[in-house]
Image (cartoon, rainbow, N blue to C red; front, top):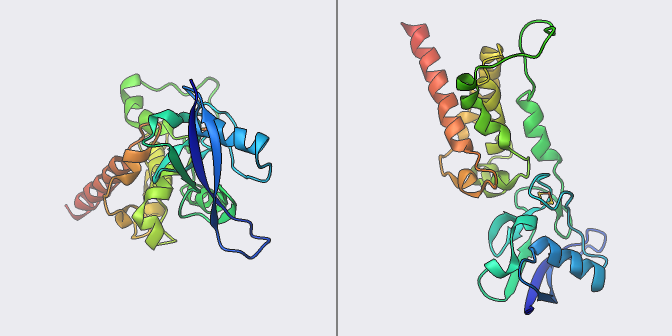
Length: 239
Ligand code: FES
């Protein structure tokens, strides 16, 4: 049986010059309907001008992160009837410039990733066969490969909010993914990219990023491990 919900969706159109406002839409929600499906229904049946971003609908592409009932979540993975009450407020992802309605400009987020050189630097020419890694060695880097670049962590990080130059949890988790990769030999150069107050030392260890990650990535832990490596290297230099 369907249940009637009201979706209060934050609207913003930069061409009007008007400030953001909420618009209410009533939707009959069956069991299992996700917030993304509700938005698609609103767009198809009530308001074709409503803008939001999505692609895979399966929690893989990371496009549909937004604030649903005050929490950053993937719209495609959030079932409406799992939420409290029947009035659902939907806002865009924080800490990124807004383009229209629920669509934000992801460029500043992707810039942070470019800054940490997110590619393998093996220090030799292409091998004839694939690089082979012992599973025991890979287990340290592997959890950090699960990031889907949804920017949920970026949207809940208080340091990102206060310091626009801060690299942020997603970039620093990706950085640790390469630092921990035994095939990569660029450790010293990599550490230099994040060894300041806009890098690993800027993190306030609030753990919001880890709590919100839909893929179980733990950026705060990666940041802590990078800090520990830096301290160990400094101690070794002094000895
Ligand atoms: S649409 Fe791809 S993660 Fe939600």
